[in-house]
Image (cartoon, rainbow, N blue to C red):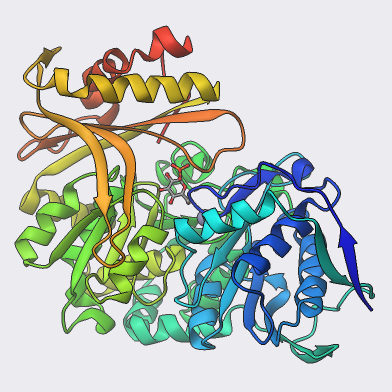
Length: 539
Ligand code: G1P
Ligand code: ZN
């Protein structure tokens, strides 16, 4: 039944910050998915005898892609595929299952927080045996292979039924369909104080978890409602839908505005958390209060001792360069390792594998620890609930206590979307060449103390990566410029801005950062080059 199908290469199958992401319609072209999957298999020396984990966020086209991948895996001699029931596995659960089973690799079918549906995006994240997404050197190999592929192998058989938990065989390949939640839940029970959180809910603490019509709905119902006793109905938008019900499943102030509105109304519950399409991002809100993701990472790190799994101490913490410097102050105070890495979770993995760090996070609503090698949305929410249960304080109190101790970092990210790729590349190249000339100059009252590209050398594999341009100002303000690596629509220029205030915690972030945004627009000549006089999105 093994067929060898001739094919011709597509030249655009390059992975970005987190796997390959394309418009669904691009992926629906003949052999597009097959070419990528066979190239992946080929460039890692084949998959004969290997075990892979397979799942996804349930978005449009996943059902078709799953069947193709299963048939290709069997045709390529894979030994075993572990698949989430009905093809569901959140990104963190996939990493958890991969590590637990000592699998050789994992494929998560997701374009993360990008919209779904036939007009939306599709994606594949590829994890290696350490549970984290493959390094850039591996993705480069795969990309090279996609440009020369001439054939792929696939079984010519009926689709496989993925609705029953249990084992079946396809030729010589074992297919184990698993409960997508069980292993992940067990892992969470081993980290957090579930009894304390149960008591918190019993005491009447009100809570909403918004799954944005994506994969973590069933996880939320099981964990928060059934196991921890949050009232039925606490999980909102709980049914995973192929088009996420039209939502852009990215939990931030813009795309989860419905939740923000609820939390700023008089009926606001005590706590709200939301996850993105594949469950690796999180947003945290208290009553009329929003926690910036950069602050969230810093607060979790500062409160690590409330969590059973981390009580004995944490090795260190890392953040992406674009993330605010709030956590740096915590690391100094706790005297733990501290690293700044390029954007993208894969850059944290060597630090975790080598025991250098325990926690890590990004400004883009991602936080996690070394329990897996992905960011973890539900983990972050459980962490906050555990702190609340132990301290009896509200989200706002916990955050204000943190500011009192360390000062407040005002932080926002401004995105300029849909820029012509060549315009965006030129803007970055010219800005980079001008950076040295900014040093010592004052722009609208802000004096530049240093300006340079962010260059990271991984302490484990020695690889060097350049990612973003940094401008530091006297007094602690900072601007970071970089181009997105996950978009499917031209280029997105991201401008990350922060300022630091040790005393005054009640300023409005957009107002506080307005002048610095103006400075950023001047430094990078944004209006002149893109025609845009303001950002398209502020998060
Ligand atoms: C974005 C975020 C980055 C995150 C990635 C995957 O990448 O900025 O922090 O790791 O999505 O969720 P970007 O589009 O900026 O390359
Ligand atoms: Zn995601």
